[in-house]
Image (cartoon, rainbow, N blue to C red):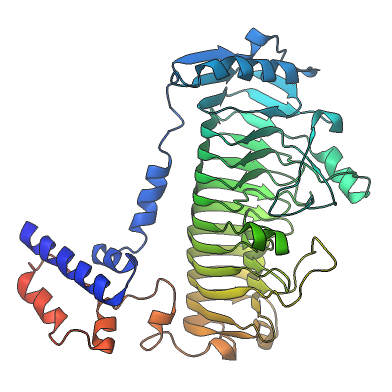
Length: 498
């Protein structure tokens, strides 16, 4: 048996070398092309929310009062300043016990665990002065809502390593209603703050907590690597404006799994900068893995890409997603002026209930940081696969709108079955400037996607290349039969894709 697998590995290495194939091909031997991503998510929680820090303090040791009235910003700041002395000694833990701990914005440090007890609630102050101003992100060029600076998040950190925010299902409450009122009444002076924002940081774990009522986006890792967000609940009223759940932004190796999110906007939105600023900064979001997400969105999508995607988005893998009572299931948002790219997107095992539009590609979405944006900076959208979708009580199957002269290419839809509530069958799919393929889609797919995936076009579809050996046959690089070699040298227990 060992000899047999050695032969497999050698042959796969030879084939990959000759053809320049990615490692994706080798995963098919195991029968699961997503096995590597699943392993990554398990590895991604490398620190573990149960990480034992050799030094620990309780917030009450620094004068904090958990009555929901006393402002404890100084207590949080002083506790973390004290714990910084242990950063090179194995790190430290800040314990937040049961109580209601009112605070303004505070900074984290490297090698820190913030642990919230079961009945602990960190409350964001409703005074804007307790959320200091900070400079705009370089990939945005200005505040997202208003020119100039922006308010800093409640829990904030930059240039950090090894940060864990966790607990026994404690709560972080941004008390965002006053910010939503200021936004709706157009009385904001600066862009609203996020609830948690970590910048330029590596090795982040956020787990086993509830986040509610964020003033703006809830969890925002930006310019970060190795981010794990597990077992979190994120809640905000359906009518609350722009209260996205989790927004990985110009970040890589991000694992989001086992989360429940119910907010006023996108549950997960993958971003990478805004127009020319995102293009210039040039940091993409890549290797984003989303597993077992459940939730509902008031105005947005279950999973969205964009609309700020100018630095590029690629290698997004989402599986076992359940979206209900929402505007859109899977959404892609972009526009002329964005530039950048979205490619190599894979969504599988998607269940939708009471969703207005199952799949939406919007090519004319959103504002621009400058009125003088370049309308010729067009996004490149290609290689998007959505498969294994079941929808009940869906109004529109799909609205897929590319751009004139900038066709969205290799869009592949497979095994999609939607129960449509609209009476007009012609309104089920609306497609323009779209090219791609489909297989087993109901109701009947729009004309630009009617060409079948199998057998001719599976290689054009991201993650549907299940004929492992067909590239060799097509290119004629090897004259002997790979299939015959395999079957003659492999035991009967080893199977290969056909």
